[in-house]
Length: 442
Image 1 (tube, rainbow, N blue to C red):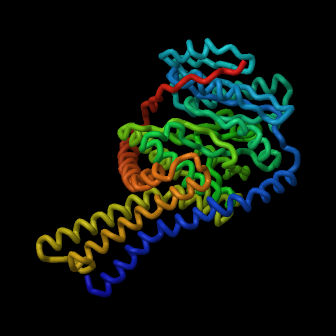
Image 2 (cartoon, rainbow, N blue to C red):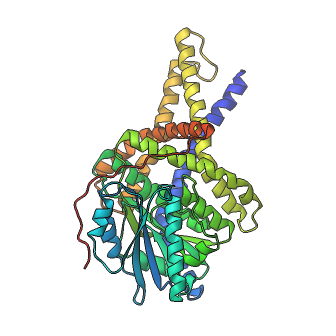
Image 3 (cartoon, one colour):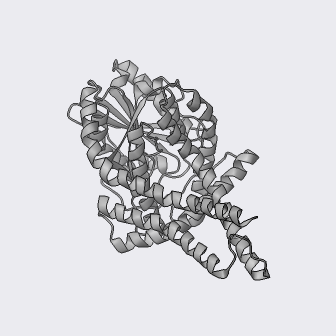
């Protein structure tokens, strides 16, 4: 390699490194400024979009061995109230639980609570199948009652989820616009007193929130497994099984809606909280499942390219979202390999061209540390500014741990690649932590 080649290689390497903090700055702008200026535009668009305001809400709670948390989840869901004149009900899908989940649910006596028990062999076919069974049941009840399906909204709150009190009001405001077929609310972490919980809240409460605000501007909002709301009529256009067996059935559902030209909105003015996974092994397993599901969604790339309903800028953002984890994994290996090669060359007395001295190696490591640390610190400041419910020392600690969190994510990406290549699809359920009981409404 010539000196000219090494210079070009170094420039390319630094460009890749700097792309991350530059992207972070762009997202921070969406997190802080765009969110505030965009609200009036969203409200005006909703008011001008007709009168699609929902009249009925169904909250589906998929439950498989959720005895530790399901009572609190159901109680919080029953506490949710929509605008005046709307009716909200809760449907718990007990998907073949063999712990005390059935007993816990049976002890909750409430007229707006419906419980659907699924037994083997139909049960335990994945979260998507449990949601499909609940969706078909709601469709049947809606038809029997003579209610228009476009006036019915189906929300998903996971077994450990708890929605903010205004969640149905915010969703109703967004869906006043008849062109909006689905909405996603912000996700926060409850047990953020532990470091891993704080890092995950930094991720959801600041980074994912900023990404979704940007996607809201580009009409590419993605649906999450927790806190997603869809019109029943929108789900019915996708057939009898809107959710698939994909490991990220929520992401796939959103992609299918975008391909059908359905408008999806995002709001951070309402939220749903969930438990963080505070065990490294289980967290790696969770992120491996997400990464493998993301890989499964790559089969939609061709349809996204061909769809006349997906704008070019929206297509670029979707491609970035679907492909960037794999690009990041490849670039990281190249950078680590370069560092190891540089260190080895210096140790044996034959330095490589682009790391000719120990000083050059030290400078490269300094740049790498700065680039990987800067985004987390910036997001800690954003989190403090937007939420203000955590002390700055805790968030800075989470920010400094964030690079290690990303390395864990890269490891999960490679594990997912191996699982997908070998055809392994089965997954163990994420365990829940016991919480203090909440009061169930009368």
